[in-house]
Length: 78
Image 1: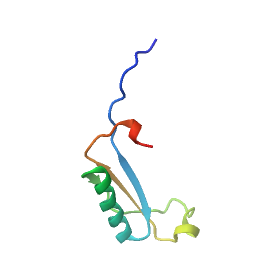
Image 2: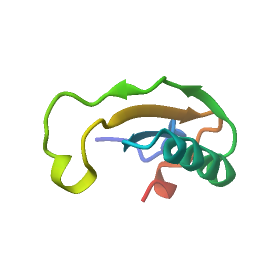
Image 3: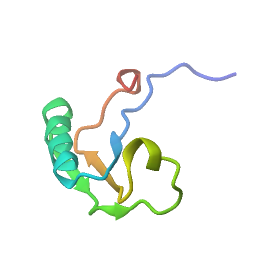
Image 4: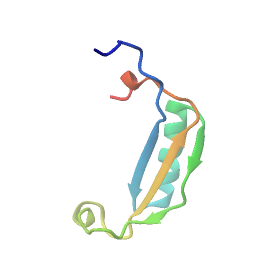
C-alpha cells in the first residue's frame, strides 16, 4: 500500500508559438510578471512540422520555450 505525501514542487515551462517576434517578447515579459524570473529561453525555432495553424495564425510561425527559476506547487498549474 502507498504512503500519502505532499507532491514535490515542479518546474514551470511554457511553449510559445507566433509569427510575430515582438509578440513573443511581450508575452515573455508578461509571464515574468506572473511567474518571476526566467532561467531559460530558447531562440525562435521555425515551426515547420505541419501547416495545421496556417489558416488561423498565418505562415512563418516561430516556437519558443521558456522556463522559470521558481518551482511551483503542482496544484497551481491549472
